[in-house]
Length: 88
Image (tube, rainbow, N blue to C red; front, side):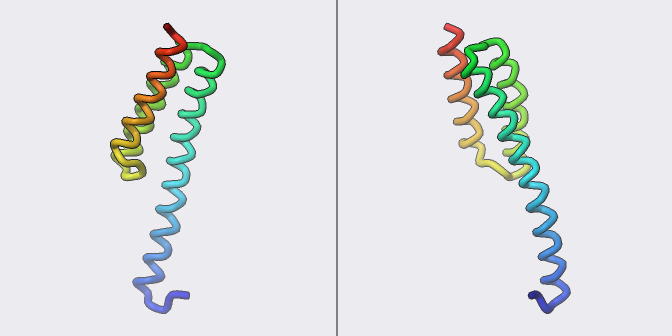
């Protein structure tokens, strides 16, 4: 257990930040899952609409420091490619 007041405060801040980050990551994964479910159901228009919202959420995760920008870009690209495959 921490002895100094500064380390106790740091623990409180870390705990709060971890909870916020878990919530944000869960939200991002939910949006990605909705896109993948639409792709699996072969519904291109629904998947494209879901990708738009997922893309916004992924890029928001980048600005918040949760994800690396290349990782988010790669996920968006791969999802878009899968949507294009079922649309065509």
